[in-house]
Image (cartoon, rainbow, N blue to C red; front, side, top):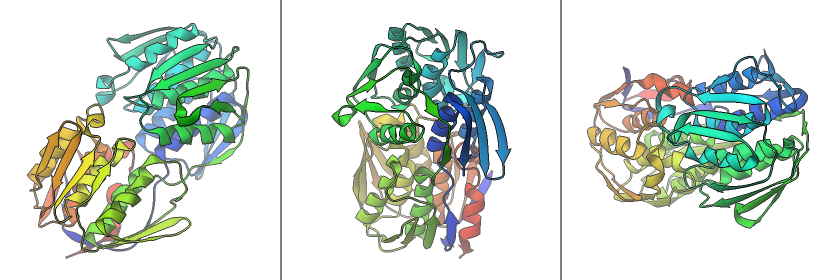
Length: 417
């Protein structure tokens, strides 16, 4: 149990490193020949899972202060000693590495723990069109894959996630044949832009159709070992910025306003509420103001739902957030978890199809359950800051999945009322 008391927030805190970018950088370093240096990497559970998978696949990893040195092996080992890859609870790790393991010979099994075993993985079966054998457990992990992939044509329905598409874009340049990837129903397009930017940094070139509807990928390319710095995580920083807007003021450093990260859209929502914002070259300062209700489309950035609900709880009036259907298969059924736990805090939420309506009000102290979902735990903690009394959060340790230092940072910023 972790307790959060109503408090005023004040001070400066560094955004944690991006877990999305760290995972991608680890995979790219694995595929490069020679030593790549990843500076400012995330140390969250998801990033550590990606690092373990890369090591099993042949990467030599050395931790050096705030850097990770990864010696990749280019085309991957023909025969890995360990054939079972444990992705922990990371959806990115499983969906991204599924295409990458097709570059090896022999059967590989991708599995995981906890909620990952309940998240849809049927999209990875599309790699069969690349000359690969692939089976899932009725659309879920574990996934059995036997390569090697030769390249070719594959279609991706990206309505559930763009993470599998990211894996294809990383793996197909190393196939012996050219490839064509067509995409329908793409959501989370900014994450694809993030992947393409990283691939360019590692020397990989992909021709892209407008709107990310198609990708022409030349085979027999090579990753270039390089130095890559991981920027701050807008997904995690969104909680800190909402805390500043609702409970005092905070300066979050290490944020790139020109980032490809989808969750920098939190700035748009904060502007809609009337929060006081000052945006610098590498930081954002936000301070409390009288906040009004807002309407926001989160279909391209579903991870913003929890901090948006925390923000809406302190706004006058009813806020509307679109994209709730994308929350069903997260670490929890996130839409229903938000309705349940914020209801305990005295905030009424209506869920209708793809739309969530949050009625602003006064948060009251209560005991809430994180549902073992890192973003639910953080959202409840942030909401409690601008409430009354003390809130107890069960299973709070789950924040280590993305932001291990969350509660430490919040306590550092708190000024007890």
